[in-house]
Image (cartoon, rainbow, N blue to C red; front, side):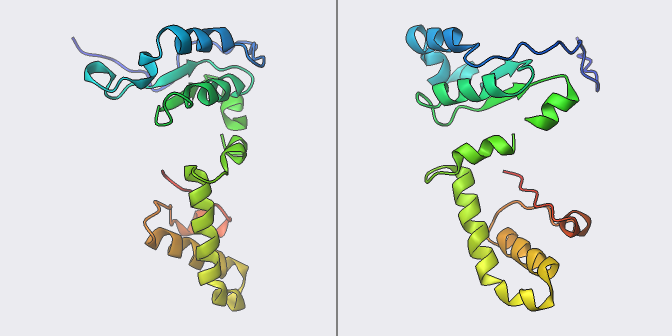
Length: 162
């Protein structure tokens, strides 16, 4: 049987019934009665993840479930999915701010970025844009998967592919 996948999302945007702790009871049920769903890595669970399908007005339900489930499994992949483009655009980078603490991947990234900026400070004499380019290339040389497209860097975009 051949599977056919649409390039466009199917479904209709809703008004987004997002409210704080909307999924708390479901999350707590899983944590109390079936935590193995979050920790198993054998067989069919080898590449499993938690998916919040249709997170609504903002990604708060995904982030709340993330906080609860990561206490049991810090490596659990978590994905929030939403059909409404504006909602998607408004949701991930700002929320990373709450994870900029020691031991978190984003914290290590920012520390490496600061070191790269310090190590290339001499490029400032050629202008801030050149310094940004140099620091970004330095960061990429350290093993971070950074998009080095000149067009994006010229706009001040630092795109990191984890």
